[in-house]
Amino acid sequence: MSRTEDFREVADRVWHARRSWCDVGVVLVGGEAGLVLVDPHGSAAAGRAVVEDVRRLGVGEVTAVVTTHWHVDHTFGTVAVTDAYGAVPVHAHEVAADELAAGADRLKARYATDPGDPHRDDVLATEVVLPTHTFSSATVLDLGDRVLELVHPGRGHTAGDLVVRVPDADVLLAGDLVEESGHPAYGEDCWPLEWPRALDLVIGLLTPQTVVLPGHGAPVGLDFVQEQRAAIGVVAETVRDAAGRGVPVSQALASASWPYPAEALEHAVRRGYEHLPRSQKRLPLL
Image 1 (tube, rainbow, N blue to C red):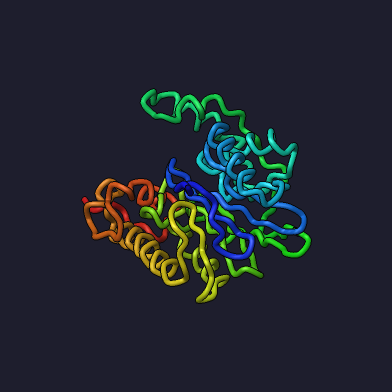
Image 2 (cartoon, one colour):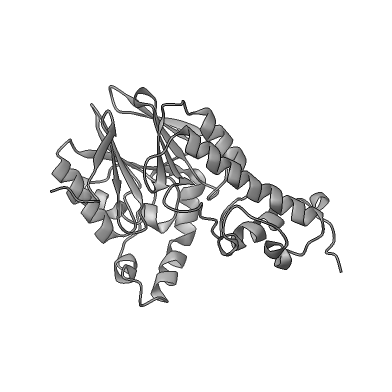
């Protein structure tokens, strides 16, 4: 009997699994040189469950890890992979590597303050493995009979987002630049005004047939990404409009209509105001 978390082949030697914790998408890409595991989940325990499922799939050994950004649900499981397969290279954008090094203890501290979180103890017990291989704009992983392209499209969900393109299979792993199981996550480290441009670059990598694997949720296609980009663009332009009209940041959410629930956009508005140049902001109206 298959489980909801099992890997499913969505294209030639590309397997996708939706893990129940946060509906995180974990992806395997296979080639002659082995398997690349992308986003090995959020704790050592969760990562071990991923490794068990990789071994159950029986398609090879993991020879590299890629993390699409630095957040806990995509990176903390890496230690389970290195425990199981040895010191495999761990690839990430250079900024994501710096953010994880600087912020891992802060992430753990947040879990420590929430004794009701069912994953709290697992997260706190996890040894964080930092990326060993970083890049600034783009790089290629050679799997022998195919290559993976790692591309930093710009700042959006975080400053160190990357996407993974599998050209021969027409698959793109979007990380949390695209989310299907909920609205895009605007966190404390988001770049709301630059996110639309990052998605424009991502869209330029897609064809009408591309299978897009989001950071959370089910596979989607070009139309979905274009629709999400449009809504993210509305968020950016609404922030610019409010600031340009002199609306105080504390009143911005109530002053306009938004494509997503206002309670999900607190950080988007605050960060947007912070990132706007002085020339695009009027003094607050009194």
